[in-house]
Length: 224
Image: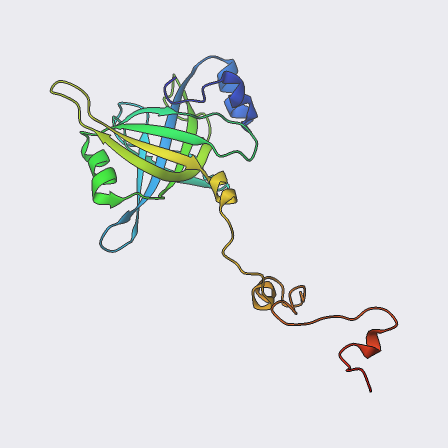
């Protein structure tokens, strides 16, 4: 329950397959979450991906549905590092959502993620998967429940005997809709979108259209 959407009704908004529905109805499933973060190498700038799953098991591969293109990918996820995920309210509107992902900071894979890599504005995807209790296999591809970027990182060092944590605060991709466009209202800018669009053809010019029967006298001096 520390990883899944907070309200059971929210899960009904997911486009679940018949295999998901059948497994849930048979009450023989185990729920797990997966986190996929794409950081950057601080030296080369190359993209580096890290995957984590909400289990104590060793690394496992799972087929997930990518939230960006809808394609299915087989990805590797590490276990034992993911502590909890909060803020997964699955609401279908345009509001900006925030999710918090808490890791065990003492794990080498987490230390590499938050200290070695640069995760500022790093893309983040969270998936929800169902495992069959008998076969220990996914009943179907894990579905995306969050798409966004890392907005902040907080590393908390606990006292002796405590648990140190690394928390990623993430904002949903909808925040992109709140950014103002850097495009200017010019003919050149508009032509990049549509070469035949002349809406801004006269922007920046001193063009004064004349209207009415006295238009032919505009700009002429009075004769004496």
